[in-house]
Length: 596
Image 1: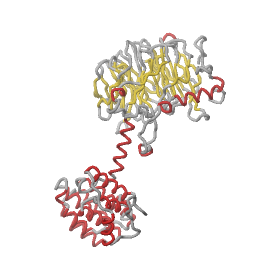
Image 2: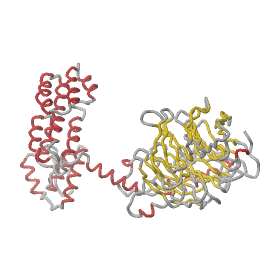
Image 3: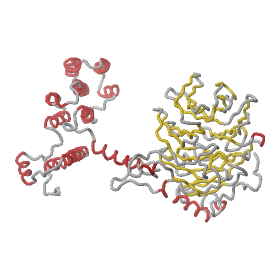
């Protein structure tokens, strides 16, 4: 085919006379060092795509070889299986290595590939000669050498490939070998593998990290390269109140979506926990709505609902009452049946809880020094004394066990293992901890710190990744939540009656100072104490407020579609939702709720 400047890519291998003639027709242009590097990277990319003739034409016109002559010969010898030629080329490249000690490792990998290919072809005598004459003298890892020597007993190629994990000479192993040794050479000699792909991926990830409203599960390689990435807030981030749930008769202190996203539980000072059902409309697709499911009463003597926790299987709902309460209650969410009431000691104050992965065990605690492991089957099982707990979470450990993370009154986040009765301090906060919330993948912990904002901790590295400011503090508890398809967003309540939403991935760059501050959602008439992201509908956020309501927030595009669908009776709940976004099928705050 014809090149843009008149150079031709021949249909076959051009001889030296044709190449010389082409060089005269296409004189090399003067390129800066940056442009020469770009040509090399592009040429490598074309070659990786299988467009070898196009890569050759690019190099010919630019007068810029992709790599040195010795490196090109080394590459060619490896791909052709010319192992003697590869060893000779490696000898000429020895001085170009980053470290002289790397030569033995490269020589071992070449001999290893040669040995495996000989075994695959049935040339066991030649393979034994490579083992004794080339691999053993290098005196590298005895374990690797022992493993390779054992392969000579394989009965055939299939067993060889199965035991070695090697896909065979025809399985791309020669190219994989080249990719593995390129790291030992400076890029001026041999480019790192897939360099352009890496640069493109880095560029897209950098754009995503600066996208204030990025809320998509698409991977970087699914995003376009033709324009800078930018998500539209209207299509991705909760920004519009689609419903106001007004069934509570007093302040609402807590709201929690179930792990499967099907239920929303809310509770507060009116001593009831309300379970709402989340339904997604078929038209428009993905526009979720909420309707009342059932109301559960904990008893006025308990002073209200302090905390709600869903079991991992979304079947059970646990409620902790206010500070003076000594009892926790577990209900079956679908039917409202009371499964368990637990009370251990009269002096207990059990105000926070978290479930373990088996959906049977859970931990409860309070700030009077009582911290228990319980189960639905048995009740109270184990205790950790003198631990004043203000917030709890659980996460799976590498050994298969479960760690309990507890924030205490000394501003510490500590790790407890009830199976081994071991504990340790993970980190200490700058001030009193009000609450904490763990991400779905259990790698991030959002900690609300009095007068210090929300701190986002990496639990694997035990470092604070982000300090999120912009919310208004006061004397009352605030709860944060991590959400979005990639767990990229953090939301929190605020004393100024607004919901704060941050994108945790925003990096320094243009507008970096702006990214430190949250988007704020207005609508509540009182302190917003708790927020919760829906783990299934990633653009859905719930907020609970002292104005006695719970608000459901959606991206603007979904919210408009959902309200239009409910107005004409095609959405979930049909005419059960009023045109102002209020759920008219919920229990009104002006009449007592039905009790279960």
